[in-house]
Image (tube, rainbow, N blue to C red):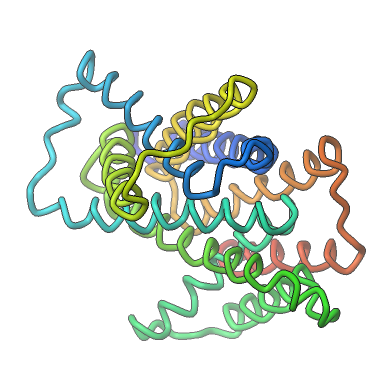
Length: 292
């Protein structure tokens, strides 16, 4: 379906919003896995590896055309899998473990600011006043979310803050690489190869199989594999194919909203007033940089 058709323009945002809402549930499920002693890297491997097995089985049964990848594009998928799956999943889950679900999700959406800065440094794209204002809003919002006004909080959770910012950077690169891959391949093939390479890199990094979940945690792990990974990745790839990456990043900001609400309702996690202001500034920066 063409992104220029009326149906494509309407369906793209719906698919991306659905993916964002499902991603917003990751923090709640991951916290359950962490309580069982499973590390963020193990959860990342379960997510990527389990989802890859599911899609590989589907491809073997009904989508063998998905394996038709040009050799020249393998480095693209390798980079996509390394940055957009292996590193991104690990640092984001680490941020969730070390911080609150809402704070981690809000730091994730520093991604558009990262894109603006990287484009200026490496592609010499002009830094307009609007973009500069968006970056300033995002940086200010991030400072409030991580409670930069409280030095004790910074010292106690520096690792969580750095992991959250790294998640924003890798999420930005994930969207950029994904958009490039989707110019040549459909969403199913793109997600299949990204997860395959991501799983391989995670196995190389860990040099072992992931820790086995207990019977009580197994449903949580299966949920993480099937819903916010298989389903959400396919929804996002499908939507991203129909719209600009920048617009997709705006629509996906439903994720931190869902994460914050679930964190409050199910985990009793509270953010103070300035942290909520910071989250609002980050989302405003996203909209300003990509939409207006």
